[in-house]
Length: 364
Image (cartoon, rainbow, N blue to C red; front, side, top):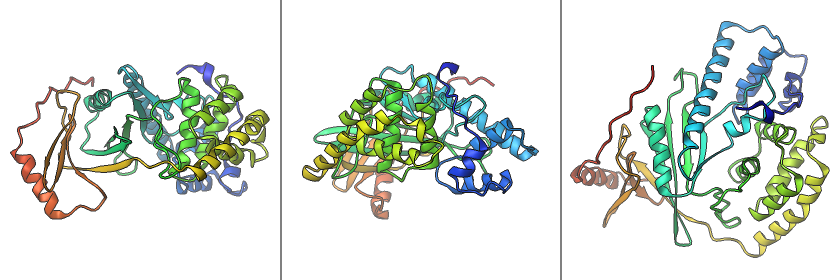
């Protein structure tokens, strides 16, 4: 991680008191409690700022912060290795963390990876399984106007499984999933990495409201030496149908007086026209959503299989997708008939075992 991307924005505990709406007269432990209650993992940032500002910390707080630093390093190493897979790009996560000021820790929930094809998706997951034992996976198949796309994820326990969040990696063969009936699935990522990260933040609005963590992410990017030129960011937001969402995030940031200057007037003003145009397009010509089918995991623990292709085995009652990492019953929704599940297990048992590859040696 190079220092030339780091923001020099004065990110402080005092600012977090304001963003989390905690009385500044209260001790830092109350700020930490508030951080644990909001969506988005913020506790490690509070702890890192507390350490940087000389707040007294006990063994428990120091231990948690040390584990979160090791967690961030785990993701950084996995991101570096993943980037060597042809057609794979990491977005958000470690890519955003490099903009945070010196001495602060951006917490990482999981690793987000966009790949150019299905082969690369299984290669990335195989790489993750080479380094981390996992027995929990998700698979979603999307049919977008006759084009098949995949989302797949793996999870494994944190360093302290009782109190630390699980680690995870999520891989997609598309950049942005969009919004059903409004914004279509978009396959490629922007070529510029920082713009890709910012638009990935904006895309999150289709899944959930923006959080304090999103606000801080954008501030750190826009105040770093790597901040994209407003015109380039405006053009990309328009091209990828995200101008309304990026404008909303910018306005959330500017609602705080001490943060307002971090978002250039040129960026906000330039986004208004594309945002209006995009909202009219959505109202007049809503996009057909991609059809989704979900994979119910049948294999545990997950395997390190040979090859980079999945195969499907269908019968009148359903379909089993056999992938290099595990087997899944493909269903149209979250509820599955127990009889169908039992039948799938019987049919899976009758299939030939998936060829395995030996697990690599891991350094102690």
